[in-house]
Length: 236
Length: 177
Image 1 (cartoon, chains in turn cyan, yellow):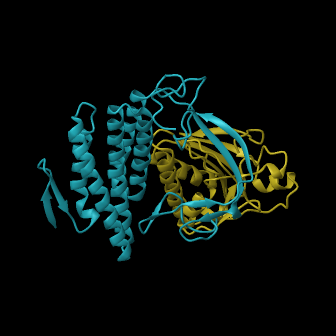
Image 2 (cartoon, one colour):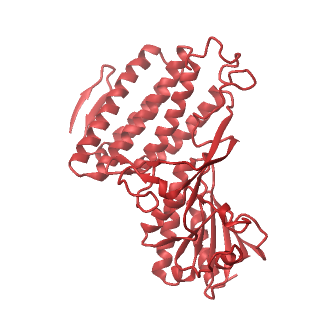
């Protein structure tokens, strides 16, 4: 095990396995959560963002290394760490975007944080308790920082023979992989090659994907409250 | 199996609601499909008991993830009707397919143990999908030792509710009210 110090004195360890690093990572995560608060100095937060980018890179590098050694469980754990750091980095991006008056970007970052936090708990069970608490925190952030959004949930009908597992390239209904789960450091995805029908689009309170939201509700931008297309539409 | 038109008497076993129910095999006949006696675990299409035509039957998108979770416990999981059409909705709540548990799947202690582990796996998957807010709704048609069907429904809020569901499956199988 090696260690080095950040400029602010934080001690960073290099561990042989993710398992070994877990207590330190969980402590670090708590410290990082404290520094995400809105009142914290923007310069400090930018330094923290750079630090997180490094942690994400290290976790990715570990994932690739373990994969190449055929160490599947450690590769999954590294992926879990990558998602955990990505989640808090995305929350920090949300705060920084607010400070730059970019509320739409802030929304996207919040959603990314929620998705990465959920993924971290899926990829490594040992992170589940932390990520469940963290997801509750992010839900509270959403409720406080943004007005309630209107979400859309399209339904699609397809033949199961048109769905392929992107890990093993077999028909999804026949393989034993589960979409969204990690296998040897890779996430299973499924590819639907042909949609037969879209029988309905529903308005839902709790969608699976929060990117599918109304952008123009009665002529108003539901994030800013300004007329749709107004000056604070920082992204198209 | 959300409709109650085929339901008989209802009783509660804690969080689990138990209802006398028609067997899927009987329902197949009503839809003009070959009547097949079910064995092991079978994934049922949405609206099996409410559909007026077999072309309206679709499988929940989660069906194949549920199948993989049960396969990991050694079950050979069947689907009721082929070819399989699937519906994917993007609501936050991960809708599980209704499952038929035939008596042969649980008449041995080993089978029962694997079923309970499978339900735990499914619960864990659903919690990870639906997040920390939503309960996980299980809908099972479970057979007693004579092949009579009961519908068991539970909105599981915790792993304890899965244990209760498992105990209820055993009680139903042994006809203990």
